[in-house]
Amino acid sequence: MEQFESAINKIVSGVVSLSETVVVSLWDSLGRVLAIDIKSDMDMPPFNKSSVDGYACRKNDIRSSLKVLEVIAAGQFPTKRIEPNTCSKIMTGAPVPEGADCILMVEDIVENTDGTVRFTGNDSKSNISKKGEDIRNGDLALAKGTNINPSHVAILAAVGVTKVTVARKPVVSILITGNELVEAENTPTGSQIRNSNGHQLVAQVLKCGATPNYVGIVIDTKEATQSAIENALAKSDVVVLTGGVSMGDFDYVPEVLKTIGVNIIFRSVAVQPGKPTLFGMLGKKVVFGLPGNPISSLFQFELMAKPAILKLMGAANPTDTSITAIIANDYSRKRAERFGLIPAFINSNGEVEPVNYHGSAHIFALSKVNAVIFAPIGVLGFKKGELVDVRQL
Image (cartoon, rainbow, N blue to C red; front, side, top):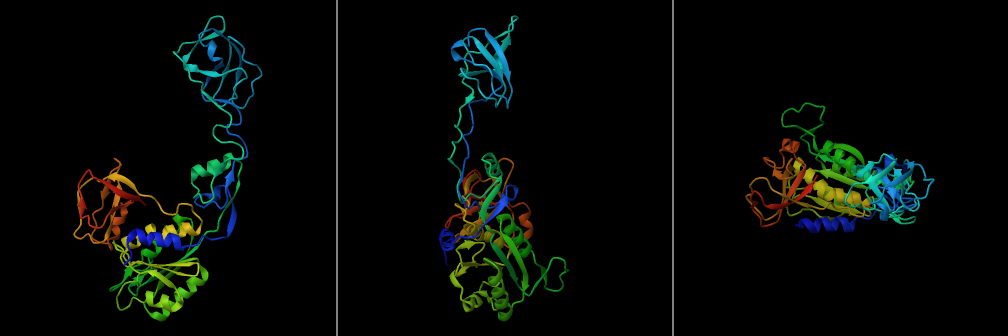
């Protein structure tokens, strides 16, 4: 049985990034992984600019009455040089006139009856943003492997990149095994239940920035399982299955994968919930067998399959880092020989609250879940107010 951290390390080290890239529009780059370094095409700021609304002057003159030479709006260059005992009214973002080394904030200025202005503050910072202090022409703006978020879109726009070279989206095929399952539009009868995992996984794949290929429900026979997996491998970069990976009489997935030639790196992980989690590879193609219970499936995709997908896209940091948070109430578990994954949500106070759930099949416990608390092996619980390791979902 693989330990939790070791399993993640084997996944990230084993997956090979895709070499294909595509060029997309700036807006379509959100959620994609940058495939090349982006360098600035100019100094920013491109000139010394005022960081406040105020009056540009010489610092040595701030105790004198200052003659106003002109008004400089944002987007307008100064026409007057600042000489002794003079100033120019200036707006935030406007270029600083020559001769000025200080911007007096408008809140600290009073107008004299003779048309001059006077500084009433005790002292003043320069309030000048220097040319190139944010970034220089040719400096690295965004590194290859950046998973593009809205702030990165702003940076791309600021350096004039409107066509963005990103990694190709991996295709992730999703297969759900189980004779007891029917699709969501059908009403279950007898011992049937609706398939929720498939749709959950499609949503998770989309959120990763990959392309889902929903194969659907596969009946529990060796022949059907093998045919479905072979077809999925031919069409995709990643195959994710749920169910069929444990030790039951109808759990054919590991046997079928070996028949196909998949190298199974591990087939169980010392976590609770989610022990029957399988990871394998066929060449550069990736296979995950996830538990059939919905909470286990949700967690194991987020913690193990997601890093593999991000690594395929060339993400520099494919694994999310955990944070520490205060636990809002006491929590205990009966056994601690496996690494614990505790469904939880971060409340309005920034504390993390374990969710009351009846086991990994309790899908309706997921309605509040936005985080998972990590409970190390040997730890049977936490006391209210303790700091715990948390992964946001």
